[in-house]
Image (cartoon, rainbow, N blue to C red):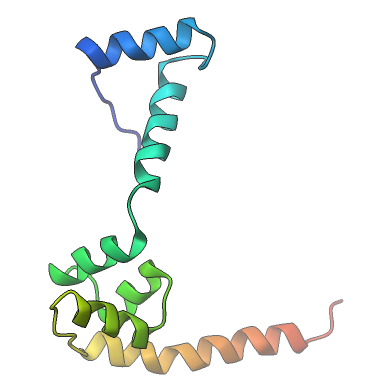
Length: 113
């Protein structure tokens, strides 16, 4: 879903200079590149911790966002002073993972037609 952003003042001048210098083809291209650079600065683990702290994601989802195991995610949370909670959603996901892996392995074992 597209988002509209109004860019004025110093930012607009600087972006127009970048375009005039031939570094970007247009305003949208320059803004997308700026966002990519900004988002690289954020560590996925910090994002996961913030979402988990606010109760917006389960432990399993936080681990997936951070790209770590659930055990490692628990350790990260403890390091941040957050007491990990294992809720119904986490337990359900823990039981689903073996089934998902088994399905992937079964698919890989089947001969290709």
